[in-house]
Image 1 (cartoon, helix red, strand yellow):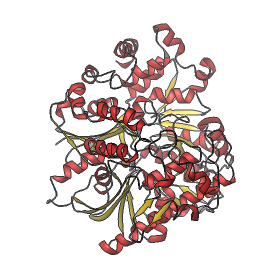
Image 2 (cartoon, rainbow, N blue to C red):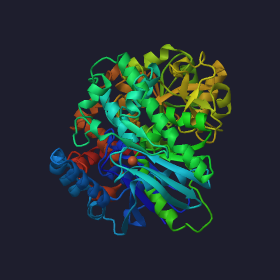
Image 3 (cartoon, rainbow, N blue to C red):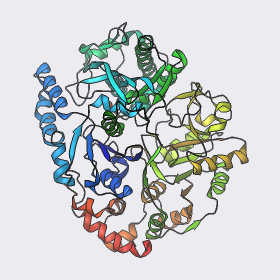
Length: 629
Ligand SMILES: [Fe+2]
């Protein structure tokens, strides 16, 4: 059976394709559409999944949507009725949009994609739970999911046994740890669903001196691990802010405007919010450990991306933890597919889906060469590019790499990454100022050879940490200054020769030169943009930033010469002018025009693109087909 899971229309659209034993393909729509947190119908991701697997849409046996739209609609109605007239905006804007877009997802798949088989529906938290449990090493575990809100649920506990997931309990909207954290993300002047990492990064700079104003009056924790929010301080009917003005008087701290400097009270509020979250999660787990006699836990839902809390649960409670790397709603696509296929196997021997970090699009060498040739960028093929990259890195250069398939989840895990020397403390400021253009307080993460992991970082009792989901104490902070946060921890990714041979060779070559088997590994994107997917995304990002060198698989583009010729940010303009299209359309067309059947079903109504898109794609292909031959 081939099952396609889809998540869309809320946060991050994604698709995942599975068969009876393997995850064949999974990708976030944003990587292909180039729109950060793209929540639209994942038409490009579906097209890529089909193309990568050599399938047509009706080769898929089932499509499973990650949540139940009817149940969600019911919750929206409840929200309107319970909060009328404050809920007028939901009634006027959200409900019609929901009814028009999300409710008819099955008919959209038939009309726009030509899908003739059955469309099934999962439940939001069951999808999260399945994404974690069925990819875990555990035969039996307690599965905890925590997010903003699904249909009604904001948190759930399942017992995973064999191929079965049994729901034990759940907490409903508006009582939500995810929303609690998001509201303070907004209060601190950061964007919701994007700035939560910034609050986590800011927290170690402060003292949790507002903790008692949060725990109790705002977030009430109960003995059995449940929690409630004091509704008085929140307003989830508004779009622009989700807190009530009474919260300002209660805290005695003004909300920070996005353009305002980050001051001590903001550090302290971030530290307090982080502390409150950690105490809340630490209250959930012990009753479950006692009741179900296990220390094996799986986690998913957006809150499971909080690396600091994840590490604290292991340190303080001694649990064994497995977290799905795409813990947010994108991962629900994979969970939806897995829960559906495992339901029919509940009485069979336990089976698990091995989780690879690299599940997206692989761009073959001809596409890389065509992209470079189209843009008149000379290149060399390197026998051993790892040695060249390591030499550049040891000399203090910043290097970007693109090879193999895109990573699954929100982190760059060494398939589309920017690498740099972690020994140089000043590298952090250099990366922030010249390349990433992001806040100076945000830490960078290290990647380390798996066998050296325990010598360089606290392991938390784990043999590996391949998905960058925990903070680990740095054991040699003087040699990893650029990736050691102010609290002495690092968000470590371990890499083995089997997991990512390309990156492993670079680490190995860097270690031979410097004695340090660690590199800075940060996402290959500019601030506010999705991580690059294609070679042309990589070139565009390279020319818009201060990255010193670029490697596209084994190919070394001679970008320095091109930069001198084209100037930064002007890549391809001349070529585009020659064929009469805009640069942005060139990228759009070249990157997405791969599947003729998929293009026939393309709908501007669902996924706004230039109306002339297929024509543009044809123009671009006509120009490069000689190179592809
Ligand atoms: Fe969720």
